[in-house]
Image 1 (spheres, one colour):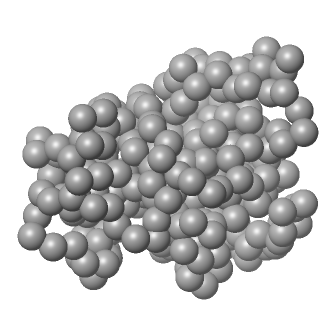
Image 2 (spheres, helix red, strand yellow):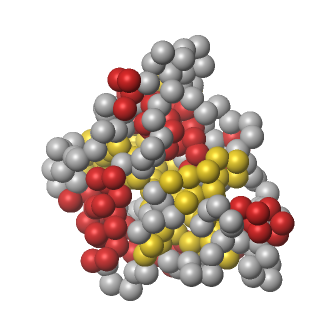
Length: 254
């Protein structure tokens, strides 16, 4: 099976001896790395580009997901860094979101700009992949994980204000900048998608100040754990998944 991994950082312990490829799409050329893990082929894409320098509001979301679709990837595991809006979710914890709220403003959000297609977002993240991530977080020593969470997606690149976080925290648990539209676009392509979120800070107003360095340091610290969780999850993915991700598109057109 072909499995996609998308992240803002390279995961060297997971992607071993990769072959670099370029996937041509209608939205631009996308750089990817291909390697093997057991019976699976892994396709890794850095969402922020080959040099990891594209800001979140400029990421080529359509190109990235189309590259996975064109490569016949069946599942995508997304890694994201987030801030926590709840005291019960602390830095260094992991969250496997089950739902999202979209507060982005200027992004291309769909492949269907000229058709009336309305994909079902009742279960936006693949239940089968979520179950695999949850089980393998529990198997990994030293991991504190949260089996549910509402992901609030903001436009960026600035961080949120304390008043925004106070408002958002009434409806969501974690906040990030890249989770949407990735999850929506994957569903439009009939690809199973789930996200593993690393909490790197408390959101604005819940700690004294926020720095990009803090986010980078915690992510770097958790890299080996992220790699271990992903290895276990890739090994456990079954070709016959108990989900409707592929079928949701069949009844979406008017």
